[in-house]
Length: 299
Image (cartoon, rainbow, N blue to C red; front, side, top):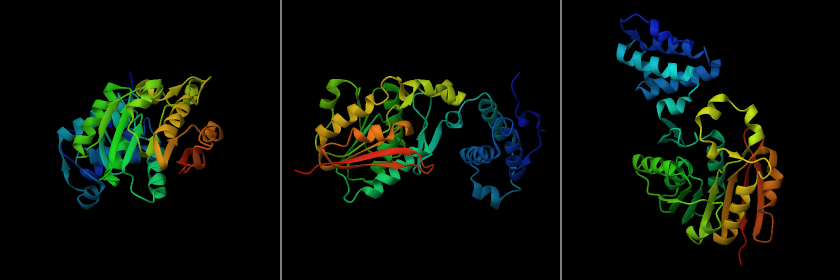
């Protein structure tokens, strides 16, 4: 029998909002660290309509049995190992509220960090942006929000991912063109528009051999197609992206990719040739090689 939520044993009378938050954190500590339990409890309550500001301003507000039942169900799923974002069916990325489920990867803080870094690099608003392997659409939509006059494309092999990305675009009132394509296929390059100003991608880059070090909830719930590459060819997606960048970027256009920290220099070398005026390897907030960028040569 798996761990039970504290809420299964709560008496039926109303509980104050502050007390509910404390009990929720206690229950989450059965399977989470203190910091994780604190962050999760805040996110769960916000999802149910109780943001932190409300908890602080109205700590004595009564919370009825229906909300407690919802919390009990959420906590039970978390104890079973399902990621919180999938349990709630949503996440926040660059202040966008996005739907997520097992069809797509959960957007990571590193991807949001890449967004901030590339936006800082942009000197002139891009007119055409392409996101390769768009998944939930997080990068494509965040870039469309920041550059509303740009034509933005989101490319993915998965029909399920593209359907979810379309839903996210509608929910956030952002217009993006979605297209199904396999970026490893030779013909994929012909499906991309020409004169791209900004080409971005967070492709699969985790080696199969790295599975043994990964959390069970990632392996059991997140789509392997979007995560893993064979050990014998870990840079296959980056070679394809480099070819596309050479063919499709306009002069002065930029390509940005998120990478496996183990292959920083090797990945950067794919963009270090005469087709690009300069390239760079950047670290994330944990001081790990995480992003590569390159700028297309001008004539």
